[in-house]
Length: 334
Image 1 (cartoon, rainbow, N blue to C red):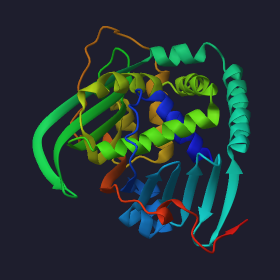
Image 2 (cartoon, rainbow, N blue to C red):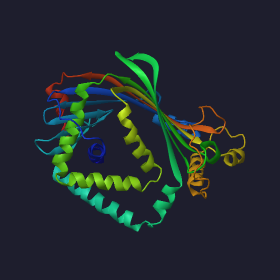
Image 3 (spheres, helix red, strand yellow):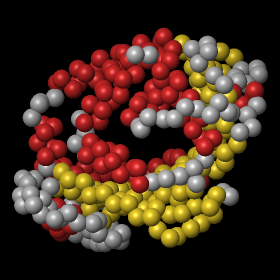
Image 4 (cartoon, helix red, strand yellow):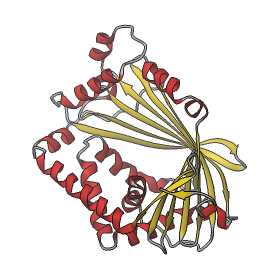
């Protein structure tokens, strides 16, 4: 159920959406996340086929219903009934919650979040945020590729988080690189976003604006995320079209001191990554007027890849059947 609320909340933070097209739509996405090092090998061992080949998810929208299916699990949202069905395809069963029950869960989570925010020391957030800077770049390349029948052009978006007043290679930090293969806008996909917006408004009503504000405040509790998201929203207007394939790479960058202490170790542990980030944002700031610097090229000795995520739009169709947005016959309620 949390997935439904998070999806609705994400829309609150996005740019206002245009009205839905009033048409049915069905889409399929494939997602694969690969962690590097020992942690990645452990995940691969336990995740099996899904880690190696990726996970395919489908979403179908028709009228007041939306069905989302990933693997053996599904979620059906019915705006007319004001109910959400959680479906277990393997067990041939489902559970149902009303909007009122979900709304109560959201209110309880909201109250808990406010308690946690109030318990934090007021001085912690401003100090941490003041010690960071974000470098952002968007490069629309001439490289093209046909992906799943769509003519795509590659755009590279890079975000680097570093200590304020110091170059990335001096202070260490974090680099996120997104390779976006953009096709002309696929209008039908707006229907999925429009449905989520309708769901959010019907579920939370006048609390939708409050939800957006509270989620923004919660995000601000994480110093790395706030400046990165603010810059992302500012620069997102430079992109046009629909991303068919997105490849995101997350790299940690060690400072010279950190690189020396690591010696010849090829990959950092998860604990080492946390230590790096803690060191990055815990140091005393200096030289506030130092120039910003573009991230170092991939493969530099002090760069270590933490994870690579690939998301791809496999198909889009406006042909949706009644069965695509219904509980399968023979399934029993738990």
